[in-house]
Length: 186
Picture 1 (cartoon, rainbow, N blue to C red):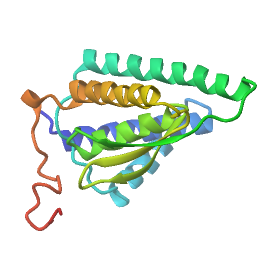
Picture 2 (cartoon, rainbow, N blue to C red):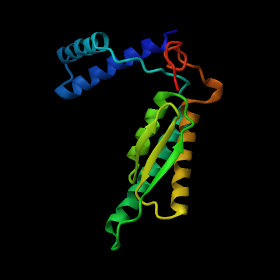
Picture 3 (cartoon, rainbow, N blue to C red):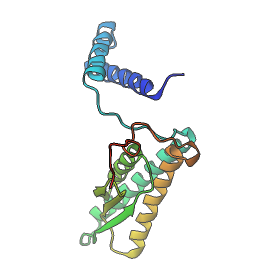
């Protein structure tokens, strides 16, 4: 069985070749070979730092995560559009503190990206070591609106945990800073 690192490199190669072919706009053997050469150079001569991959992907939970995120983005788009079109002053904003429960850095980065793509919200600060984030909320004029937004964050985060970080599948990566004896987290 192939290990994860090799699978990630192969996926990177295929993805870069695909992007190369898209950029050139033609699917020909020379274009694909040139793309493979560029992809191999990028992947092996200019490698990115290792991203610890921990946990396991659960496809059905992932689909549920995608549907939940799409729903929240559409709902928030309608709400922000209404705030822009209604004949009244701008709503009061809020800064919401949230302690994230996801354990892997990859899941945390993806979760922050999802929150930033929901209209009306943006993660403005993230304490990586303590897993605390501050999220700006466009319409935070009442305790009910803030509580509803906190519930949205909790729902999306729990979908991330079900899709990527179930406790029964959790396996700490040997490349994680938490397992490196030379790295000290405070």
